[in-house]
Image (cartoon, rainbow, N blue to C red; front, side):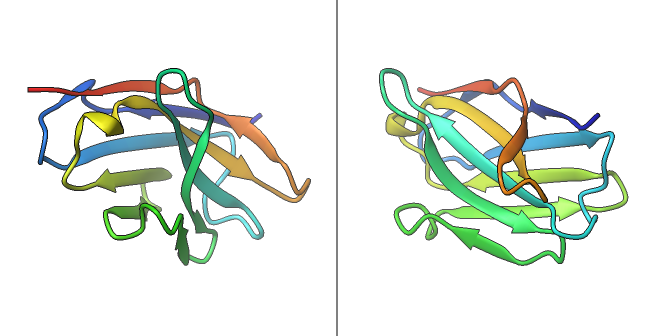
Length: 119
């Protein structure tokens, strides 16, 4: 089965770049028709979709975040990366990676990782 695990620093200072990694096992990130997304959930708020990278390497981002967001991949390591620049305390959230597959659903999710933006 597909498993995803987010990792990265739990604390980031304002104005710095947040960088997270999603390690995928049980399935290739280059497999046809698999899309790999990042979402986040700030405290007390709903889940916010940030963007995705497709099996071909193409990307798409939320309009509200695209100026600061970069999603990439390392196919040799079967990993996804998320970079969010110029962070503020409002970027504090639990960050998730997930797969959107042939089922037309987000069928596999990581457990999420807490990121706090503070001085």
